Length: 289
Image (cartoon, rainbow, N blue to C red; front, side, top):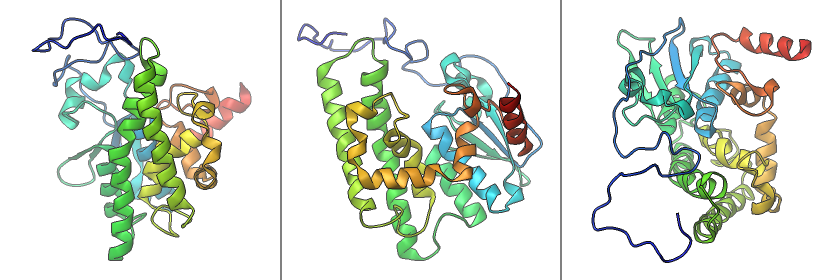
């Protein structure tokens, strides 16, 4: 990949070589499964197939928040999908999500299994299913959905744009890094201005809009994304900082961050979750290690 002007796009693009960068081995221009592999199924109503990336953290946080409110019917089995190894291209996973992206959910609580894919769709599905974290009043519900879908539309610029070129591309390139840095800082300013007016994104109530946005922008503000906190000067966004720290202190959020996590501090990793007691066992493991 060149920074200069020595590349001229061909009239017709063809896939002749790997794209380079961290995820070159799993990037491809076609959909569908690459291998046969059934998904495991546990005993709980919800079966989650995911990994502890920001999009995965959205859903595990939502489940843990529901359980913290006493919704025992929200018990779930969380199965690890190792995206770096191509688990998302197994035939069973593709049946649940034809787009081969985590997270993917199957609700087996009814007569027929219901598949739900895309993190925003899963949050909305669970919010409606349990009547939590989504206001019923029309204006407040609409504002919640405004910020939920803002995140869904904005985060690709943060992850696939800034994150890719800043942290994962084969070599640093000034133009794409500048382009996406400018956009990410603009997005942080959007959030900062909103959070100067309200405690949470939709108003005074914690909602799925906060859960979705915190997983990306809250963790970015706390210096957990791409080791880019200093580069982006995230401390400048004081209202985002206040919001990010408040949500980070919630026990359900702390548990949600652990599930399907395979990186970072060992004390924050719980590769798969099949019962609430898994957290107790994990704590005991950390203490005894």
